[in-house]
Length: 348
Ligand SMILES: NC(=O)c1ccc[n+]([C@@H]2O[C@H](COP(=O)([O-])OP(=O)(O)OC[C@H]3O[C@@H](n4cnc5c(N)ncnc54)[C@H](O)[C@@H]3O)[C@@H](O)[C@H]2O)c1
Image (spheres, rainbow, N blue to C red):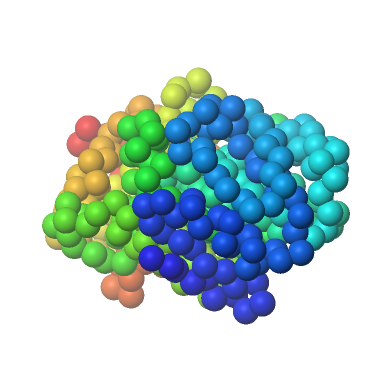
């Protein structure tokens, strides 16, 4: 399955298939005919996986970075840039990110600034990377002041989503990615019953297809791309409070809560009815996601964080379902949100 991302001269394909990683050499030959070196950016644990058998057709240099979120710092960016230079990567050469969202974000950032920009290909190995992080061209690292505060837009030359490598991905990481898939499922309005009969590659393709269409219409997130933040206003606030309290909350768990609350908020605003809320609950359940797996936080504290959320434009802004589909709704009354959050906790 080949999903095109239609971005004119920056257009590329996302290949979704069991064994998609074996297309790497052909992809590099087609997109980087003058490349001599491929810098494979990955982590030590991933390099040890049985599927790490990548063939580039070029002189391959493997550069490892810390596993997980620890890769996403300015210090790691600097270190990676120095190692790309030591490997003598020229402007014609290519960076290949092999990993989850953290590796793709760091390697994409490095590729976008190394020699003022070289090509990058993502071999996305986590479900989050396959359905979200590797597609769309956003790169970034974290600052002490917050997540993803430094970054660039740098579209890859191609993305390989190999569903075979997901067999080694831990169950919690699978659920983490399934929350983003559920978000796409809800945006597309697909039936809850269809979840169980859709193979994993089909789920990835559906999410990639939606993201590719939205990115093609709004590359730099000025408008329509905001729909992909469905469930994320509350999710970001939950994650911020979890970090402050030292609670172990994965992004996807927060998104599942965020989607469930967004449905209840839309109902409180008269935008949707009980049936539509039940539909949201059924889709989340079909994906095996519990909206109550995140700890309970005080509604007032969540609202305070949401008001300063960068995507909320200093106002209580949510992406909500409604008669015209899922769209951005600004100026939502904080008192109403407080009541919805309280009632959500009573359902726990
Ligand atoms: N750029 C974007 O548009 C975008 C979108 C969504 C998320 N992100 C970013 O992506 C990051 C989250 O990505 P993530 O959830 O993939 O986290 P991650 O990259 O930290 O990976 C999670 C864990 O899974 C492991 N892993 C990955 N693939 C594996 C496999 N096939 N087998 C076994 N283990 C495997 C990783 O080594 C890591 O330990 C965050 O930093 C987030 O900000 C970026």
